[in-house]
Amino acid sequence: METFDVQSAAYHRNPYPTLARLLAAGPMVAWKMPLLGQVHWATSFESASDFLKGADRFAADGRNAGKRNSLGIRWVPRTLRILMQNMLLMDEPDHRRLRKLVDAPFHRGWIDAYRPTIAGIADRLLDEIQSRGERDIVPGFARALPLEVICEILGLQGDRRQFMAWMANFSGAMNAWTLIRVIPALRKMMAYLRREIDRVQVEQPPCLLTEIVNAEADGDRMTDDEMMSMVVLLFAAGHETTTHLLSSGIHALLTHRDQLELLKADASRAPQAVEEILRYCSPVQATKPRMARRDMEFHGTRLKRGDRVMAMLASANVDPAAFDDPLRFDILRDGKNRHVGFGGGLHLCLGIHLARAEAQIALERLFARWPDVRLAVPDDELRWQPRLGMRGLASLPLAWS
Ligand code: HEM
Image 1 (tube, helix red, strand yellow):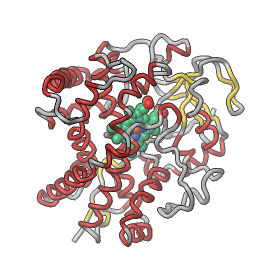
Image 2 (cartoon, helix red, strand yellow; image 1 turned 60 degrees about the vertical axis):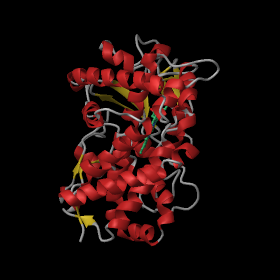
Image 3 (cartoon, protein in one colour; image 1 turned 45 degrees about the horizontal axis):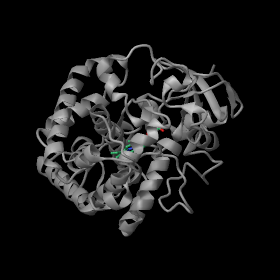
């Protein structure tokens, strides 16, 4: 069985030859992965899109595919079991119930009202980087901006810095062992969140946490554990993803200077540029695993009930059957850029408008402040994160006058 390296730093430095091999291997490709075992990957734009729309055939909750728990693994610590009550691991009708309760504050209008706040945070972070004489744009900007923005929107008080450190720790946990190691920090974080939820219930400040606490649809409300799990999901799903969108986007523009000049000549091109970054870089490379609900044939492959399937969004986004000249990074790409960078179907990213707003503003502020910004080290010396399912830089040192 052919295997594909979609995790190492070498893959992330230049994923395109591997993605081309994956596409050539067919619309469904299977190989054995550490911890997960055999996984079937929907690789083409067509099979990935079909998979994303196929909630009737693929379950996000393993219990709907004959497994003992939602993750479909043997044993899960109690702390994590609470956090598993999140909508990314749910199927209908449970998923719709929770999603309906938080959809409204993530609509474009609600998020657009935060644009000045986001721009203010971006400017302050860039000021701080400049005054510290820092060159690496990842910790102080690409990582800090999404964390600060979500803390601000949620309205978290108390020791935010500590909370952000817990969260960064948590998302660095890549496998079962590192996950178990972060459990004590996770417990502290959950205690902090319970205090914040209690405070907001009494004080009712105007913020997203208050919206979550008060959320009611058709007479239904979230339980305390569901609220906690929701807030952690918003951080987990929204922070590293956006960090990688920023680092890989800045990198793509700096290594395609003609495209950067097009953006600098007209800042109103930022929304198009962000969509092309989402397509070309795929900061989220793959969906979470789903499990086949029953034995079936899917795009020429026989699947058994319980088999794990994931969509490889990164290969779907460079599929020549769906995009003209897909390896060309072109911020003015004709027509609708129908990438699957935000997934699709039932679990389509909730944070689409927030992620877009953050990225558009971040690029605009960075390139307006430092028009001659460039890589401070040769491209092949940059460090990419060795990570399954996400693509971004571990550090991105820049130079400017
Ligand atoms: C570059 C930024 C982002 C990218 C590329 C991205 C991508 C994705 C993708 C691909 C999924 C679907 C995963 C799957 O089907 O298994 C997803 C789901 C989700 N995302 Fe995002 N995301 C980003 C930012 C955000 C932000 C800022 C938030 C919120 C603060 C957020 C919240 C969520 C949530 C809650 C889900 C689960 C939705 C559901 O199950 O209905 N994301 N995201």
